Structures are given as C-alpha cells and as structure tokens.
Image: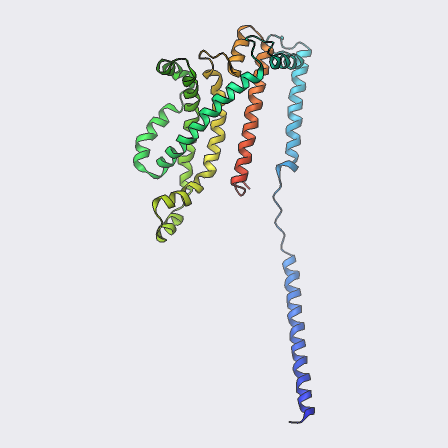
Length: 302
C-alpha cells in the first residue's frame, strides 16, 4: 500500500472519530438539558429563618400588653394579678434576699436545680435500661409493666405522705418524689422505641454472627434513641411540675418553697415572679435537650 493510500485512510478514520465525539457531546448536552428540567429539592429550612418565630414573639408581646392593660385599668385586683412592674420589683428584691426567709433568689434556684438534676439523672440511669428490657424481653414486660402502668397516672401528692413515712422529711424524700415523676415517661419511651428496630435489621446482624449484646447496642439502642430523647424532654417537664410538691416537705430553700412561703403572706408578686423563673429555667433546659437531640440525630424530624 502506498504512502498516499495510508494518509487517506488515516484522515478517514480521524473524521469518523471526530463525528462520533461530536455526537457523544450532543447527547451529553441533551442529557444535561433534560436533567435541568428536574426540579431541585428545596433545602431544609431552619426554624431560625422561619417567620413562625416572629409570630411567637408577637404573641408573647401581645399577652404581656394585655396583662399590663388589665392591671392598669383595674380589671383584676392587684391581689389576684399584680402589674408587671410589681413583678419586676419583686424579682429585684428576691435577688437581693429582701423577702421572707432571707435567702436570695439564686440560692433558691440552686437548691431546686440540684434536686431536679439529681433525681433526673438517677431516673435516666435506671429507667432507660428498664424500658429497653421491657421492650426486648417478654418476662420483663410481664413483671414490670403492671407496676409502671399502676403508678404512672397517680399524682405525686397522692403518694407523698407514704414517702414521708418511709424516708422522713430529709432530702431523700424530695429526690424520690421527683425521681418517680421522671421514671415512668422515660421507661415507657424507651420501651416504645425498641419497636423501631425492624426484623430485617436484627436478622441481618444475626446472619453475620452477632451476639445479643451486639444486636442490642448496634440496632436496638440506636433505633430507640429518638423516642428516648422525647421521653427525656417530657420527664424534665414533669420534674419541674413536681418540684413544688417535693419542696412542700419541710424545705427551707427552693423555688417551690419560696412560692409557697410567699403565698402564705399574700405576696402575689413574688408568687408570679417565682412561676416565671421556674418556667424560664424549664424552657431553657427543654431548648438544651432539643439541641442535644439535633446533635445526636440531625436527620430526625426533617
């Protein structure tokens, strides 16, 4: 074959390759154009940028304005509902300790927080294993579920006298009362969360030769974690609602005792101030638990 024939053959081959490349490029461009027609998924919208937050702020401001208007126009006697400025003044007096009992507000808050946190931590340590055991073991559910369902709807004041008879009027009775209020919601949440573990996940780990403890810590506990965190938030609310009843038992310090002592002297401004302080602390702790939930489970609830 001559040199001229070889050159013609090379040119023909290169032209065919160029045409194939151009056709492939056209196909890729068409695919890109068709893919651009697919609507993009809207990004997750954080609550910080949501206008609902502003509506919440406006609603709170409206309630405060209504409170001020009701007291300013004497719709409600000051003994029943003190004006906002009286509550702020009572806050300053309580912070300095210029109230009945002589203890400052931060001292009362410190004692109440210690009781709530101590009982709450003990409830978490014991209620989570009990709830998981009830969810994975039939005999544990048969033995523990009737007791748990029996005392769960009882108000704390119903068994408070029995606790005082057992433990006296020391700190142990206060801790036990708050502990019992926290135990039930955490245990029930942990028991319900174990149902999130599917049979496919358990059978897959079993086929790989996993032990029961490995299935517990790698499948059941992670599946139950969202429900457990919800139970922790509910239990924290129950702990603060039980605080006043717990501090009725011969307590000299604590926010609940401060409110009860002020009610005996008809200091409604201190009572309202104490309610706001307890609510603010509980709201802050609930927000902290929400942050922990978002950190541990960033995909949950989106």
